[in-house]
Image 1 (cartoon, rainbow over the protein chains, first blue to last red):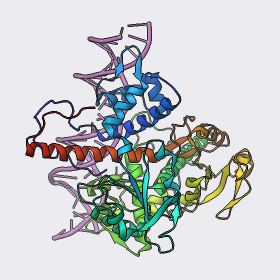
Image 2 (image 1 turned 90 degrees about the horizontal axis):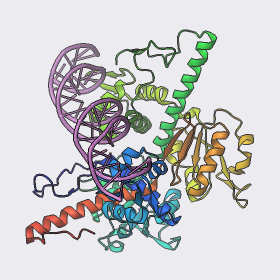
Image 3 (image 1 turned 45 degrees about the horizontal axis):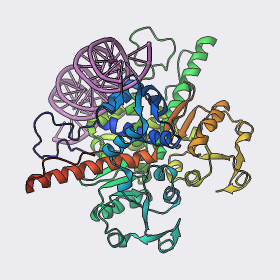
Image 4 (image 1 turned 90 degrees about the vertical axis):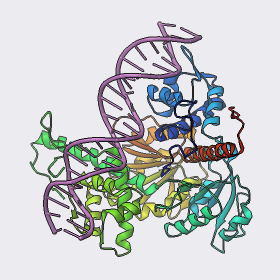
Length: 246
Length: 246
DNA sequence: GTCTGTGAAAAGTTTCACAGCA
DNA sequence: TGCTGTGAAACTTTTCACAGAC
């Protein structure tokens, strides 16, 4: 998340052009979800959808969906809903069409391999354009038609300045030096699967996906509902009055 | 907070007990991160750490970290910091020790396979206890020492009621029926990697990891900073007054 | 009548700043 | 002195509720 930008300088007219950048961060991540849903709807041949239906498919409430979309403009038709193709086009334009941004993956272990042909990437138009690792046994081999390059060759392979998204799927201890290398090569967006927090310059955006934390959060919720169940039982049976307390 | 009684439910007086379960959701997900950092610190032999250092490692500010921990109790020492082992123990107790919750994976494609031995799971003590799929060619084969069972055999294989976390790594179109099956077998926590929103009963917790959306969000940030750069250039060169605007 | 777009209110979250303890 | 724990303030996000377009 990081991103302490806010107006990035650039002397904007003090008040109201359209909407310079100003989409709230929470909204941006939901817009990405909506776009995914719209892609499926379009593929299924759905032409029109109401805020209620789209919201249900995305798992949010309909007021939230309408508020989110209102940050982009008024693309709905009152009394009818949204034209799927048109709304999809507008979202694509506004949040950055996936077609334009090739993706590279550093760290071709199990997870990196799984992501190369990940359906959720290709269905949105993202394409993995190169793979990197430092393991000599991997360098030079191919995965899904892509040759694995040595990380040292990063700049040579990625001279295309449009490559701006790097996925880090290395072990935690290598992640920071790998990130440094990527940043050095001009990559501005990182998706980090390593379980550490990456330090990067302010103009680089990092999103972290911590799968261990996700499970841990589920464990918390499970523990919570078990505790509720147990105390409900205690109430029925008379209970013991005090809990173990650590 | 100070008061550590709290009593997990148990017929609270109507108005102001302490806080029933009450850890804010935003805090819970950071606590999971802190626990991961503490695990690494403990492994590295660090005995004591200040809020500032721990916060830096977790990527948050130190006031936030202290506030988060204050929801659990006062486990720090003023003027000194936190005892790593003790804080780790307390977090483990409070957010649900990973040791207690076996995990099953449904959908043994590339992603499912990658998760079986995912370092981020095992480093937290999570252990994948069974694999399921519906593909006849996969059923009966082994991955990392685990036999892949048919989803129809779920209840038979998972009679252990402590199995309460299910990971869904199927294609989007199968995810809802798979979730229904898991819920039917009594599983209360799902980690969903499919690109759809799962409908589940209110007592089931779902967390969704949408990797496509993650990239899309990065694409948005990239587009934003490119637009900033371009408009900065336009200002220097005189600019063209209007942007292409679709 | 139906469904969008949006101000205004409510809820949740983060940051500040400092009292208080080791 | 140096750091934690925490009220109170600032900010962000969500929800409500309804005017207005079709």
